[in-house]
Length: 232
Ligand SMILES: [Fe+2]
Image 1 (cartoon, rainbow, N blue to C red):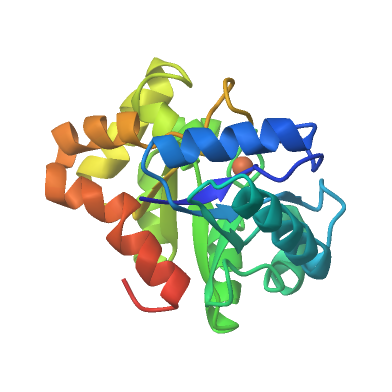
Image 2: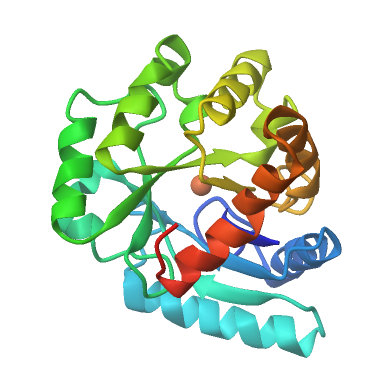
């Protein structure tokens, strides 16, 4: 499996505080069957620019290899929409046209559609992170349908489907799945024990909602195409 949203880098934003914690996360991911993973620090919260994220990823990859863990890292970012389309465009997932965008945790801004449009116009394909945890979406899930119709993709958090973010996010995640508005399942992992990089449990639930083959696409086929820069 491939996890395209994870805060795994040591001593970066609210991920693991040290190398041991980061390696513990890498071991959890590999044990769960995740062998490719995008390191996606918060931007701008981490204070890192693209080159600095890439350097941290390369350094941590060396540690992962030295520890004998079967995990390949890719450069990404969990970029806040508040920085605007131009700054967002500097933070692709790997080197392709796709990128994670994070709306404020409190609401979906009125100009969300405009931002999606602006990114698409720049040749960027925005992937909206965990909308099932956003209060505006919990009230009106169809807002996500509109953004998907406009060309955005959607990533939901695996742990939402297993109830880790409460019954409302769980129900909303299932609703988005049933409507075909979900393109990726990711861990949004932050540590080896609290929000670990685990996809298998969420995959099981997704399989019950949309069928096993469709669920597998969210953790295997779609993320592979995204890393390769191919259309879904
Ligand atoms: Fe995140």
